Structure formats: C-alpha cells, structure tokens
Image (cartoon, rainbow, N blue to C red):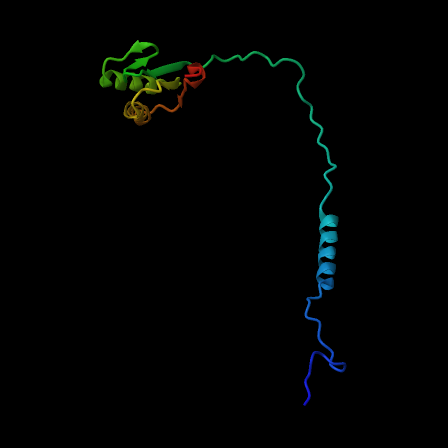
Length: 144
C-alpha cells in the first residue's frame, strides 16, 4: 500500500504567479518616451502693456431704464407707476423703437409673484427689447 503525501522529488511544479518583469519594463519605456516627448514650457511671450491711466471714454453712457416690480405686483417704469398692462406695452414698444435701445433692468421684489415677473419679461422679449437684465436686491436685504 502506497500513498503519495505531497510532491515527491521528481516532479517540477510550475510557477503560477504572473511574471510582471516584462510589464514593468514596458511601462518604464513608455514613461521615459512620454517624458522625452513632452515639450518644456520655457517659452515666454513678451507683451508691451499700457502704462498709466486709460483715457476717459469719449462716447455717451448707455441710457438705463429700470422696471421695478413691487411686492404687491405693481410695476414702475423709472420710478413712475404704470397704470395697466396696455401702458406697459406702449412703454416697451417705444423703448424698442428707438434706434439705440436703452439698457433695461428688471428689478423684482422678492415677494412679487413669479407670474407677474415672467409676464413682464415675456412682454419685453416679445416686443423686441434686446438689452435686458434682471437686477437683484439681495445685497440690500441685510440679515433678514
């Protein structure tokens, strides 16, 4: 009766680990190639920057129209209350008809209805106002 208890002497067992030496060699060659091919950033660009203060602007400052929407959804045009929507549409049409359109700032109160603000913005866009911006009041609110 004979039993084989482990590997005897004659049989060579194969190594089951992956040989990583060729992989490391290839990665080192690729790394060296990458380092050689990257150009050095030693080029400099000399620029002649202007010295002193810039000259004052020669053209006129743009005209600004402020459309404010208050907490009770009342609309004002440069501080003057607008009675109804037809008056607001007429004001938008006259502003859009000017050859050099004025810059328009929409200034909604944070308590104003979204519906009113969206309606004013849609009217302005529909009637051809090109320079339109929304101005926030957050910087004036403080810690409320």
